[in-house]
Image 1 (cartoon, one colour):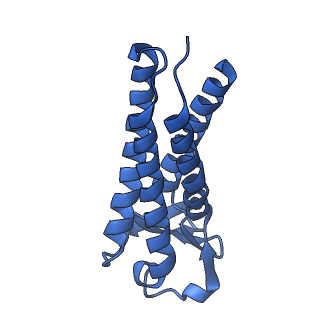
Image 2 (cartoon, rainbow, N blue to C red; image 1 turned 60 degrees about the vertical axis):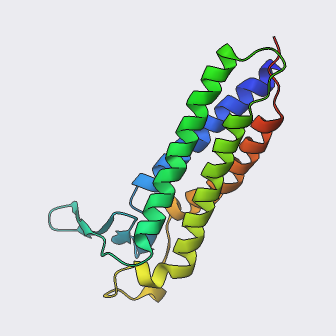
Length: 165
């Protein structure tokens, strides 16, 4: 039982870290390694100064939805972890971690919705000045999709996990 508890806690922390990176890093769409776009900024690498020059992403109909859903996913997963720690020390023997599991499932559904919206509407979200066919999805986009089954799976594990002493 102790190994399962350590596994679930480690899985939760890894998933939370990946989710935070997917939300905050700047690589949801990449053009030739010198330009990229994320949920917050459009950046290009300046060879002369050796720095990234970034400007705010243009407002579209879909970008705020993706931003809110990814932030909501991080918040739900964080709340889930804090509630899990609280329940671990205060719950009576034999109790189930329902609230923790539901928060984790909601985090997974929010991340799924955000990644799906970005997938279906990336042409409206990305800057219109760039040709989308010359670019590809970046690692943060892939991390968001990887987080979806991990969040949903850990949510189901939490729902079935009983506290034993």
